[in-house]
Image 1 (cartoon, one colour):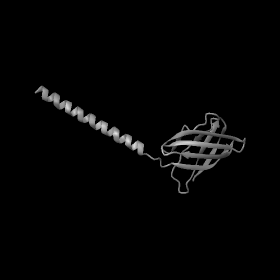
Image 2 (spheres, rainbow, N blue to C red):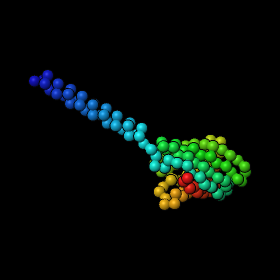
Image 3 (cartoon, rainbow, N blue to C red):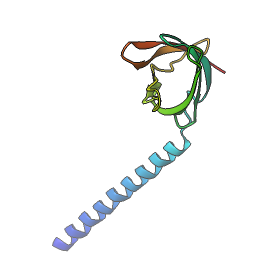
Image 4 (spheres, rainbow, N blue to C red):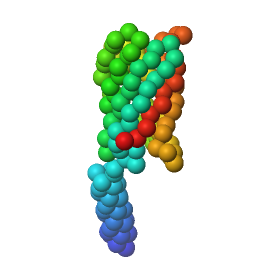
Length: 131
C-alpha cells in the first residue's frame, strides 16, 4: 500500500512539474512575440531653461533611443533607456544628466508631452508628435 502512495505522489509531482514547464514555455513565447504599442519615431521640441529638438525611437521591445539637439548652447547628444508600460524608465543621458520624465499615453492627435530635467533648477517641458 505504501508503494502505491509513493507512486501516486511521484506521478502528481511529475504532472505538476510538467505544467510548470509548459507555463514557462508559453510565457517565454508571449515575451518573444511582444511588440510595444508605443513602437515608432517621435519628433518634437523641448523648452525651459534649455531648448532644442528631440527625436525618440521606441523599439518593439520598449527600448528608447534619444537624440537631443540644444539650440541654446549648440549641444548634441544621443542616449538611451527603456519604458515600463507607457512610462519612461531611466531615459537619462550619462554625459549631461538630461532626463526625460513622463509617459506616452493614447492621444487622438498622436501628440505627447511631459517634463525633462538636467539638475537642480534646470528643467522644462517636451512635446512630441508620432511620425
